[in-house]
Image 1 (spheres, rainbow, N blue to C red):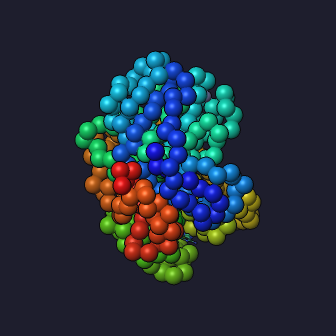
Image 2 (image 1 turned 60 degrees about the vertical axis):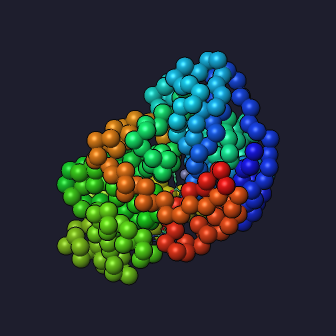
Image 3 (image 1 turned 135 degrees about the horizontal axis):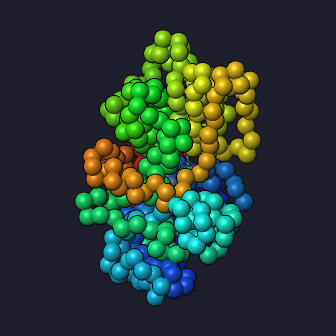
Length: 350
Ligand SMILES: NC(=O)c1ccc[n+]([C@@H]2O[C@H](COP(=O)([O-])OP(=O)(O)OC[C@H]3O[C@@H](n4cnc5c(N)ncnc54)[C@H](O)[C@@H]3O)[C@@H](O)[C@H]2O)c1
Ligand SMILES: [Zn+2]
Ligand SMILES: [Zn+2]
C-alpha cells in the first residue's frame, strides 16, 4: 500500500510499504477512505523529536476489511472513524473512556507517533488495536469530513471546553483559530457561552470564527481589544488552542478574576515561562491536557445529530483536498498557511 513516511523535520514522502496485518484477534484492518493532516503533525515537521523513520498521521475514517475473531461490535464493510488516542480496553480508565490514563501501557498511545507496533493513519490502510474500544461506527448521515473532525480535532475542542466548564452566560476567548480553535468556538457556543471572542494573527481565520458566531478581536493590541469588548472585566474562560509562551501569557492577561484557562495547544518547547503571579492574584484555574477521544465521541455524535453542532460548518473546516500521493506537497502547503488553508483532506485513492 501507499503511506506517508516521515524521516525527519520537513521530510515527508509517499512510499510503498507492506500492507498492515492483524495485530491479534482483537484488532481490525481498516481501508481508509479519507485521512487528514493535523496541527499536531506539524510539530515533528518543524522540530526533531528524536523519532525514527515511521508512518505518520492519526486522523482517518474508512471501511473495515478484516477483523480478528474477538472483535464483537463491528463487521466487515462497516464505515468507521478511528480514535486518534488508543487504549487497552481492559483497565478501569480505558473502560471509562479515559484512554490517556491507560494503566496497561502507561505512556500515551496514539496512531502515527512512531510506536513500533502502531502504524500511522496517513496511509491506504491501518491496523487498529483493540478495535472494539478504539474505533466508532460512523453513521451514514455524517460525512467523511465530519468523521475526520471527530477523530481528534472536534473531540479535543469539546474536551477543552468541558475542562473549563463552559456554561450558560460565560464569556469565552479562544486563542489560536486553527481547526482546533474554530471547533472550540463551536463547542463553547453549543455549551451556552453568551459571547466568544476570537483571537488569531491571521485575519482569514478571525473571519472564519466570526462566521461561526464569534466576535473577532481586531485590535492588534489584543489585551486592549478584549478590555474594550468586556468593559475592562476580562473573560470567564480562555481556551488556548495554540499553546506556548506567548499565548499562555496572553491567556493569563485576558482572564477575569476567578476565571478558567484550558490549554490544549501543544508548545514545541518542553518548558515555557509562566506568569504565575498574575494568575495568583486572579485566583485563576489552569487546565491542560491531552484529549481521550473515546470519552468525547458519543456525546459529539448526539450533538451533531440533534443539530446543536452544525455538520456543514464542521465540513467547511476542511478547506482543501489533495491525493495521498501528494503528501509531501500537502504538508508544505498546510505549513505555509497560504490560500486560507485550515485543514487538508488526503484522498488515499489518488
Ligand atoms: N491536547 C490535545 O489533545 C491536542 C489534540 C489535537 C491537537 N492539539 C494541538 O492543538 C494545537 C492546534 O491545532 P490546530 O490543528 O488547530 O493547529 P494550527 O497550527 O492550525 O493552529 C494554531 C493557530 O494558532 C495561531 N497562533 C499562533 N500564535 C498565535 C498568537 N501569538 N496569537 C494568536 N494566535 C496565534 C496560528 O495563527 C494558528 O491559526 C496544536 O498545537 C496541536 O498540536 C492538541
Ligand atoms: Zn490531530
Ligand atoms: Zn488501558
